[in-house]
Length: 615
Image (cartoon, rainbow, N blue to C red):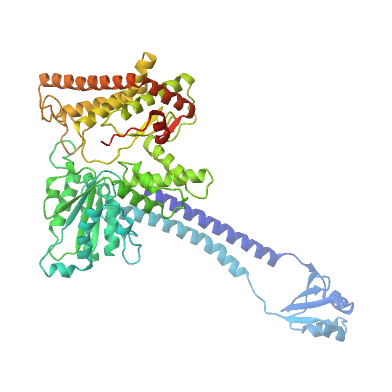
């Protein structure tokens, strides 16, 4: 704020100095034109020149005469005071007829000296007044800033004189169940008396939870757009400031303004920034944050039955929120926004491409099939990346190729064209990726291969993309074991073909080990039985538990390690058997990869033969 005020003050000073310089310049020009020296002649000479007919016009100002000649030159002279100009010229020998033939203009004398003196005196005074006024405003702004701390920073949409949220349910694809739940909120905000008359209480608060990018903020704005009511939007972090009491003051100011604008919606994004569980030790004892949370709780309790304010909030971490926030009477409804399914992804892509020119070959259904697990934000980014790629190629429309390339860019990162692999690295990468693909193709519970590539993207030297036939909400033990075998397929292939392994398998080893450990500790899918083994948290969230101790002994820990090793060993045996039995196909795929660098599903299936794993 201080820097902003200093910049404004400096800008004002510069503007004033420039204006002063302009005024002085104009004054100099006027003074120069007014005071410039002119040729002086006698009145006798003027009479002679009139007789010679070289004078065009004379201007008389009291005793001063200004003479304008035919050749555009100018001269000055004086006559005796009290004598008429015509008579004075006759007395000095000018011909009467010739005097009458020229223009004689009589003007009143104007004295500019007083105005010039006034300007020179006034300009410095005005300059000093301006300087003092600027300093005073700056000091006043700094003093008033302290009073502005307690004012809410919420952005208001849909208020008179301000733009609306600009979003309706038509702009939100998928999330049908969530929209149905929120329709009641919209109806209440439109016709509150219909509910109040029956004694119905609309939920005071609705908590939106879900992974990042699933559309929590978008659906909240859509509710305001549908209801056509003011929409107060603020992030949880904007309540907290350096000074104690500012957060609670901003909460009071926010709800006070909302009460004046009801019916309206108050939307708090990232609620976990101020709503973390209290009294949990480190992070939980932050007095300013706790005061802000307490103020939100008391404000939501203060809503009367006929209050027409609905509080929407969103968070990615509902598990760290204080239980007082989640009880009925505050956030009565909790809506979970899941990642979109295939049908919803296609609808989302239609929304994000309706303003983009597409070629006729664009198949949004295929793009939706290739993007399982993508959130709405990632799909929006995908459409934008495709548009950027088409513009880079100087195309007038976006084609299917741009979309498919953008999927890989979003998943793995941009193509590293500057990274040139040696022939040995290229061969190693080709056999590694072919090993993943072969194991995936010949394991019943593994996912089918969509594409194989040895083009470097991000940190990956190559990649194998697998797309499930159908999306599932649950995963069976056999599917986890198949996934571990596929991940180790590249590692086993390197060992069989080259007799040693490279560092290219590090990500595969991390993921396969993680799956194996989850099978034992979390999913209860090992010989240790259906037990959930709780261990130390890998990430510490302030305001929640700082650390968690293991709930099992060292002896059990050894058994867990043994079970994890057993899963990995079994997966290695499965992978090795498939690779050795299909070594000829492996080499065909690898050699084709070395030639083309990328293989789509159709070409890959021509090499190995189409395998039906649905049954």
